[in-house]
Image (tube, rainbow, N blue to C red; front, side):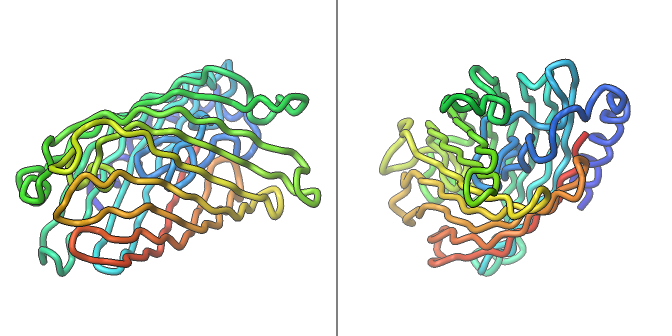
Length: 285
């Protein structure tokens, strides 16, 4: 709770400086906050840039996410700054409570992200099939590597994920409803997003993995969608499964969004068939 409060206060303080200069973008065009801090869906980054700033403005988001997993608890909180609808800089901290696997203990991870929009506009380029494209990286440092990850056979306490995302919003695309599609290709060595370290005895090299999202806007403020995230399987101690979710996002204004989801996370450490109830609150400027 302490670090989440500090992150939110910091975001609101910095955002106050730019309040007069942000807010020109349309509702929902900054996405919500991904578990690792980037603008996007809950499981995967999108090519959208955080905040509500146009190409002449600086925008910002702050978020807090909680996953009540069958045998674990995951908290994630962070901030992201969008510069002129072109560059995004983000920071997130994750904490995984280990539940009955290691009672009373947890693993923390810090993530610094950078994203660059390189092509297109997901909203305004309606006369072409070309999506908005962004390139990004996420530098991750596991703060508790010597505790569980090393014992499971992970090779490193830090790593860099690199990715390319393509996002397209089709206005009045399905029965008159707006539809968003996203595809992301990620290069990674991370085990469970890095919470169980990087690399392992089975594999210690970068692998390419697909991530996808699809959402339909039921009205201007409510989106229903699903996501899929292909995962590496580097540790022989425990199998790692892909992630899936179904989500409902409510955006009552440009400044606030609430996302609820049901996620299937598969095998996590020694616990099979893990499912999660997911809730995320985001403030945007």
